[in-house]
Length: 142
Ligand SMILES: [Zn+2]
Ligand SMILES: [Zn+2]
Ligand SMILES: [Zn+2]
Image 1 (tube, rainbow, N blue to C red):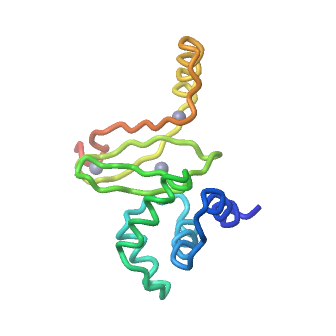
Image 2 (cartoon, rainbow, N blue to C red; image 1 turned 135 degrees about the vertical axis):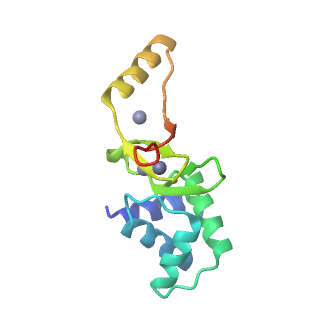
């Protein structure tokens, strides 16, 4: 199944229609997979492609996609939100620079194993987790 079809199914499953703007936004997200985009970035990318979608619609759609677990949202301290596609096979966490807003992705098996041991210890099943470390990147620390 294509990623677009998969996302469409998630929408339909929750009784939402795949409207024109929603489809356009999904396309932009797919084309920029791996990037961390703000709503303004997505709005801009839509315009570049010749799609006029209002910023308010972009915001609402991104919120909806997050609710449906299509997208994942990353909040910064200055209240900027970044969005990225939720890809199960690319599980990762984030190092966020408070000075230049750079986002560094990392994954660490030890972290995941630690979580598994917590699950066992508390008989708890973790269905979702997000880890972000805030601080200063190597360039900003110079
Ligand atoms: Zn930095
Ligand atoms: Zn990421
Ligand atoms: Zn993890």
